[in-house]
Amino acid sequence: MLTKRIIPCLDVKDGRVVKGVQFVELRDAGDPVELAAFYDLEGADELVFLDISASHEGRETMVDVVEQVAATLAIPFTVGGGINKIDDMKRMLRAGADKVSLNTAALLNPTLIKVGADFFGSQCIVVAIDAKYDESINSWKVYTHGGRRETDWEVVAWAQEAARLGAGEILLTSMDSDGEKKGYNIALTKAVSEAIRIPVIASGGAGNAAHFLEIFDHGVADAALAASIFHYKETSVKEVKNYLREKGVPVR
Image (cartoon, rainbow, N blue to C red; front, side, top):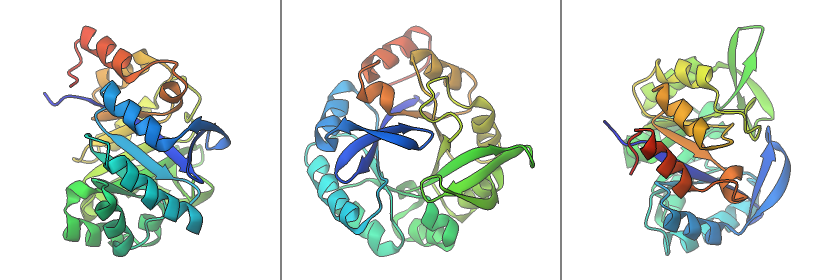
């Protein structure tokens, strides 16, 4: 049985880590390089860096941050935000990232997934999906531009298309659950993971160690991502892993 991965997420804006609730009301959470080094020591399996400002300045900052972190980090990390073409992927991978995360750019230009997978290998391409429930279709819609714009894509259909095009992994965020700390969205994660054969990272809603157990017990996620509960020391990667081990969940 594959071990489950615990992944802290660093949302970086203007060179600082920030965290909000349902993608708004952002507050400062610290220095990305210091936090990355801390999570490495804590036993995190991977790190995700998302440049959410996606401005020209933010992009330059991100390359800088990736290089600094790569110099100190022993675990794999994924970088996303404003990656719109092969050259952007090359820049981040050369700076030390192990994977790149595509979100808005992949929806605007789906062939980017295939081109990236062909060039670097599927294992380097993560497609991030921001999902919000829509009663009119009794399912979830895909959102772009940091959760600000609704698309015509239904989430499961887009996940299947991303996998078909060569994505190696799906990072699935429930916008409804994001920052609420009431648990991961089991129904959403289940719907996606049952429809595709590539790993799914659950994101949005972690409030305590029991929420990690819940998502893994349902067998619908290969990894679970969290941000604020780790940044603000409400729990730690170490505590979550110890708890999961006690409950019989295989973790590193």
